[in-house]
Length: 137
View 1: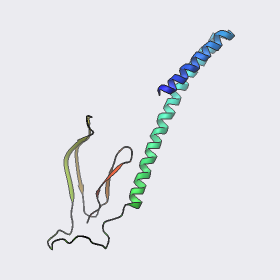
View 2 (view 1 turned 120 degrees about the vertical axis):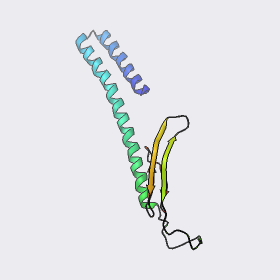
View 3 (view 1 turned 30 degrees about the horizontal axis):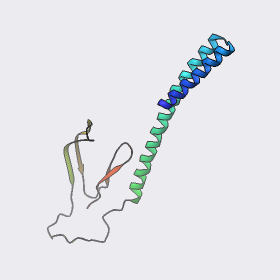
View 4 (view 1 turned 90 degrees about the horizontal axis):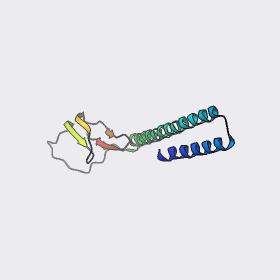
């Protein structure tokens, strides 16, 4: 944003220099400066919206690849031998979890989550990064 404001400031100085050298109408110069100031804020808004769109599209692409490429662990090949009394179904329960990045405010407050057996679940952040929580039987 600093660069955008700097470019607008340089254009404003050039406009004022031209207006004083050419002895232009003061009303037209004032209207041009106001338009130039709104151009700076409009360009900043466009750039912020574009970066938000790009972030969202990246998140959608990651979610799409997660859904299509993540293999289920319900395959026919079994690598572990489990005891006979092992439960045939499971569940993940998370209750009252608070989480934050290092040195920042809480990003998750009092999170409670219950994931049933055979559910495929991922937690996605703002940028689309995800953590696979469950894909188990």
